[in-house]
Image 1 (cartoon, rainbow, N blue to C red):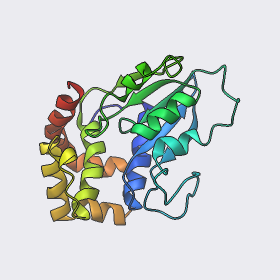
Image 2: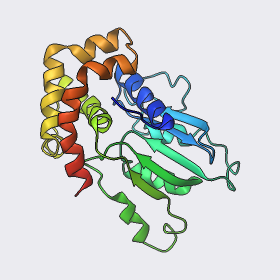
Image 3: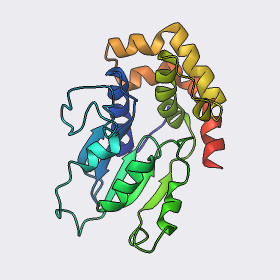
Length: 218
């Protein structure tokens, strides 16, 4: 294991909490120009209680939207805010990010279903002004873990989403292995700290990171 930027580590901790609660395992944080965390959010799609977030139990309960919903209207127009997310934003989150005062987006892992949605900025002149800068985290075991969390949920519920799993053969194989062994389920039941979850999986996640690299390269 190696260092991960503190905001992204916090986002990954939130992703793990989301997975422990039975949701999709995605986390997001928003930082100011000094990298201070000013808002957080996690996916709560399959939960009823929003807890510290705003949205739960709805298709809108995405990590990025929960983080963005914490920003007060007009309070950050002069600030340079960065959104850190464990998964490349989907269609609705990409739109919400554009409408929020976000200058930069840092993504831990690519989403096979929503690649390169930044092309939306060219639909008409208005979305393009201003468009946040998008940055992909280098392919590594952390990104593989971010993808394993959702693939594990698909496996748990017996959902065959070929558009997702076919793009992630190593991640899919690992998620199915972990489902079969019950490792992640047991760790979630014990609310194990993220570092304790990652350490025994690290070599297997490192192997699966080839899927992350292949997707980023598309």
